Length: 116
Length: 113
Image 1: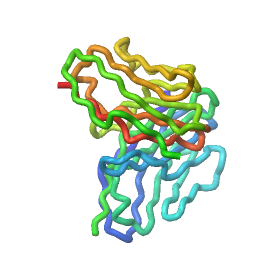
Image 2: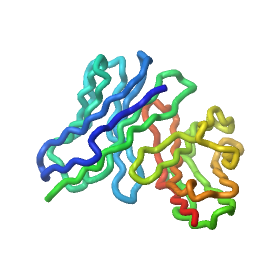
Image 3: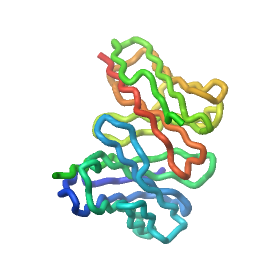
């Protein structure tokens, strides 16, 4: 079974600064996908960024980038130029690449607060 | 594309009552998922449909839980004889190709009193 660990329950960052959210996972699979989801207060969860395990290049989406270390089973999210709207819970998630089995396994999440 | 719609948004019920939630996925998405999220935790997988077929069901789902997706369109999740431990946010998500991620609904918050 896969597990996803987010060991930091809360983080805080000053507006316009950079913050990194940590995530580790455990799997015996070689091919899989990793995701970061954002859940703003009382709003729906949205996809921030995804990474395919067979790609060495780290994914980037505007101010969001990841540091994917496959051997270390680490998948951190870097948010640059933090904005007030980035305040949310962030979840790291894992999905096996087996076609029929497409469920996501989530970590417990981290609450990020961006200070003005 | 109006996104994934879930109804009701909130439900308060007395212990022992039955409740049913509805999820309308994005129309072209053939995969539909139900997750449960308790306060301060990440979502936990409950069950998943590909079209009308229920392909996987979590061990978290006791016999009191049942889900359907007739005709591969909307889905319902029913909880019979609710217990206080069933209080949670129930999330529905859909996808066309899961490896690109899901689209989530806003959830149904269930409170059992």
